[in-house]
Image (cartoon, rainbow, N blue to C red; front, side, top):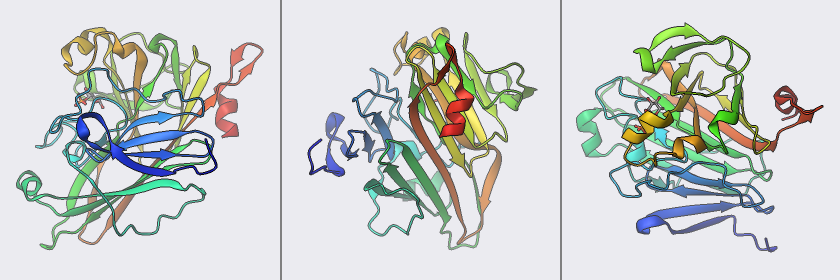
Length: 314
Ligand code: BG6
């Protein structure tokens, strides 16, 4: 990268949709579509893609984009009356002309502020006014930070309630060789069994069939270890007590029109979320939820992966 790094560049993406590219000096980059306020690419300094986006993804409103980091708001899943995962991922966000100060300890110059407010159409299905401010920042070390601030701007005195998730699709080399650490022994709701509550057993989470679980009250750090690539993703979250883990595996993948039959092998969703206990905001109140992800080389100790070391060091 030259000395004149362009930290923030606005351009056109697939199908002429508006896209913003964030770049950092060492070569890290990230791409964000205004459609959905959705990150669709996050690359390390070698130009390797760290997020999964399906080769069959629709970049055509009103469909959502399969992959990257869709924003699920004001509803995660289909638990209420709204469309699955809410409408935020299917709306055109705008650049926020007047962002509030976002306290940050990072010196990032590669960031953007987006805003979504209710359309008249939205208020028919969800009769509330809101301001959803999203800051996306790429740190100098390549870490990707997302901060959501949601404010109730109702003028009728009414509170509103919502659930939320950063639906992150991590790119993995081979799902059968992936381990997730930080969720073992926790309680989860099994979305494949009508949200039945169970407790996770065992050492770490590995994958050999379809998984769709909402872990509740999780620690703030989760590690996703891609053994084959010797890479560990570290996810940190704040204000988001839950974590959804999803992989459709082969049969379900075949039923998803915008996912290739074999693509499930290269994706894993680990989603910082607030699902079990919905958030309620009174008029004028604001909620904040943060996710930060980084990708680091996995540490090996006498041939053995030691993710705890990675977690301690980062
Ligand atoms: C996950 C849910 O977060 O998203 C799954 O837990 C769901 O139940 C998956 O199938 C994909 O949802 P969608 O609406 O993007 O196909």
